[in-house]
Image (cartoon, rainbow, N blue to C red; front, side, top):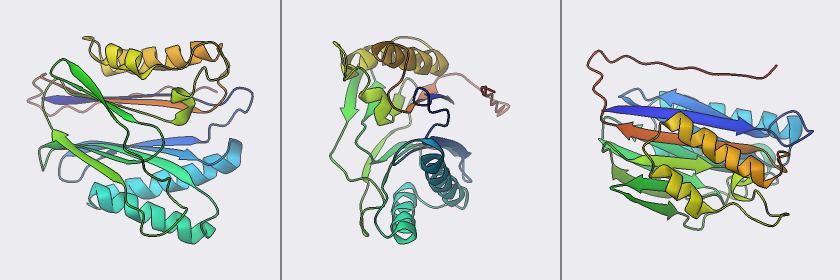
Length: 232
């Protein structure tokens, strides 16, 4: 099997700097994780905060920490650093090769969508954002690491798209897109494009769409690839 990961993101219109941060991390015992952090507010201040949290989460994963522990530590550190006065939302998507499972960890008001065996569902258990109090627990979901399974995570700029217009972002439409036979890149870009259209091409908040897709592709050489594009 092979895991495809693709992230598409855009900042709030006319702000310039996105307050959302994303890290893609190779797990030390095999597998890959995607960290999605939405910092409170917009602009450079939010970016500095979200970048610090995402980097800390990535370092913990690289050191072998379990996903639930990662979420608890970044919560406690943000709480201690800012005295409980600043919050952020955090989502962690992992393909854990050592344990043979997918792990979804959430301290976010945005859901994670899961598609497998021709069906899609929404992981949206109510949770609190990180940073507001100590001893905060994430929502943890373990899934089989099986070919054909797709995970999609967002920040709230995506799920709130269109809230000031005639049509709001539809999780049902996103689920339908996940059931199509398309790549992780095509899926992430199509959902972000849909959200942008709802905001008339001028996003009212920072937006992130992250897709993790398990495929049946045989990769006997263990070839790993990564690519990125960045606007200047």
